[in-house]
Figure (cartoon, rainbow, N blue to C red):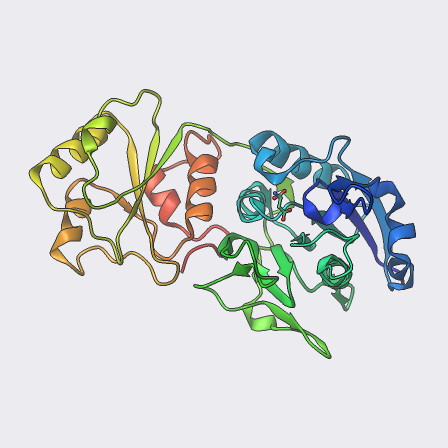
Length: 337
Ligand code: ASP
C-alpha cells in the first residue's frame, strides 16, 4: 500500500534556485517540484504538495504560522500517513519545538527539513534532505507509523525536534541534538533507532492545543551586565535566563535584589544554560543557590528554543491545571531528561 505524505512548503532556502543570469537567489514555484525533482515520483509514497501562498524566510515564522501549520495537519490528519514541513533553517528548531507541544497524542510522523543550499544549486543538500525525509515521513510497520513525534531530518541525521539547535550557518551538518541521541541515520541503509523514539500516551487522542503566549522574555547574562535595566518590564509573565555553565550567576546583592523583585511582581523565572550540552544543576555551586532561594525553575538540559516555546505554550494555558513550575518541570514530549 502506498503511503500518503502531505508536504507543506513554508519557504526558506530549500525552495530557491539561482538565476544564472543575475546570480541571485529567487523562490521558485513549489507547485512544480515534481519537474525539478523527478526522483520524487520514484518514491514508494505518494506526495501531495501544499505550498504557503507567500513563502517565508524562517525569521518571519512565529506563533501565527505555527498555528496555521498545526491546524492544517489536524485538518488533514486522517487523510495522510505522514507530514513533511519544508522550512528555512534559521528558526526550524523553534517551529519543531512549538509543534511538539501543540500537537498532542501524535500517532504519525511530522518531519521538518530544509537546506543550506537552494534546491536549484549544483551542490545542493536539499535533494537528499527532502528525499530521505519523505522516507521517514512514510515509514510504517505493521500498519503503524514508526515515528510518532516531531523530528528534524538534516544531513543524514534524524533528530528529536525539541532537542535540536542550529549551530552552523556554514556546514551542511547544521543541526545538533547535544542532550539526546539521534533517532535515525541515513547511510547505505536508512536506519532508525527504535529505543530512542518518543511514544506518546496512547490514551490521548490526537488533537491540537494551540495556546501560545508571547509574554516571555529571554536574557542571556554576561559578566558586567547591568540588571537595573530589567526591574520593571510590564507584561513579563516568564523570564528565561540563560546563565553560565551548570547554573551560575554573579553573586552580588544587586542580583538577588533584582531577581527577587521580578519574582515579587509575579514573573516566573526559568533558568537554562549558555552551554550547548549538559544542563542546569541547582546547588552544584554556591553561585547557583540564588535560584533556589527565589523559587526559579530549572530548565535542566533543555535547549533555549525548547524552553522558550514550552513556556509560551504553558503560561496561562487553561488545559494545564497546577502550577507553571510543576508543568514546566514535567517531560511533556521528550524535551527534558
Ligand atoms: N534565511 C533562511 C531561512 O531560514 C535560511 C535557510 O533557509 O537556510 O529562511
